[in-house]
Amino acid sequence: MQSPKRVLAIDYGSRRLGVAISDPMNIIAQGLPTLENDRALYEQLHVIVRDHPIGCIVVGMPYNLKGELGVKAKEVEEFIERLRTEVGIPVITWDERFTSKLAQSAMQEMGTKKMKRRRKGAVDQMASVLLLQSYLDRRKD
Image (cartoon, rainbow, N blue to C red):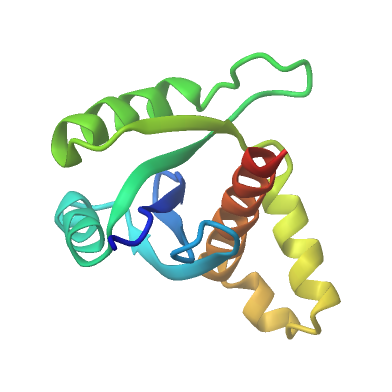
């Protein structure tokens, strides 16, 4: 019997991408190493997709407080279009409002030292985990 396909989540940033993956049963999100947004990005995403049975990719879409697309949305939309072309897997957008703030708060509550919280990559990774977990939880409803 083939195991269910996992969900990959990306918290897009101009410099770095937070990346998270679901467990095989699509219940729990876990962080993967943060990726630099450079020329090697799509090659690294190909490796993740090759190494894990990914069914879809969830990308955080930056909405503002009114629920409208934020200023960064155009850049994210361009990333999504190229991602669809490069990996050939369905891409879903998901509201990412507050994920970075929630990530910082969660890390603080977990007792993460202040210096580690300041490392942007750690916040990006936690933001992608929160993004994916909210998507997985909503699918269960």
